[in-house]
Length: 286
Picture 1 (tube, rainbow, N blue to C red):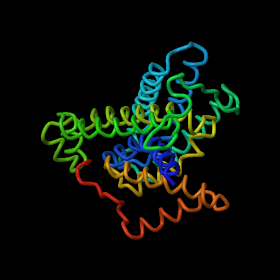
Picture 2: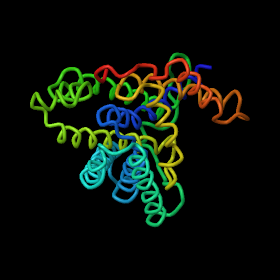
Picture 3: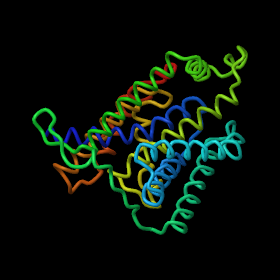
């Protein structure tokens, strides 16, 4: 049981790292961005190629993955997304799902349909002892990174001027603009940052989720479940939801493999019936 919870927690950390950026952008911009997984895929491919072809160290490849996804997100926000912020949500869905298919086709054409190879650094291989259990070193690393990112985001949102502007814009964009906040620039920076987090999650997911051109479609529903169940526009909400989803998914596949991912959807339906606005509704991005 302990191993199942540990593995579920590690899986949940990946879902949180990728999904939290989507939660922030949805809460700030009310933009339904189904292309968020594509930015995770960008980060994953950049990290995989940097390590395998350029012999870049693992830590530096994670930074490159963050920066590459943030830059791609910034370009798409400037060229496409900002033109549709005030459009109908169906327009958001059509644009973003179209971008997903473009990324999938492009990755298949350039890299082929196969899984990208990944070898973790020697320090993250094998097993380590933790609380009387033998657990995967890489999974333990994912959990540590997940908690570190959560703490950093909470400090950024609650203790910095940028975080105060984001919280103000989440609460009321018109009032924030009246107080001198440049909401359009804030949207741009926040969208790019959220895409960078997705890229970081995609790179970290190489050792657990794997990476192929179908990644953005394969895991899209999981990112959306994390945001919807946790509460769009919050940070703690997606974290709690990701942990629960990870444990339920891993536990279900371990104890009842014949059900596959069915338990995840049951869990989602039950939570949304009880808490239709998510586990932690939006209250200033906490």
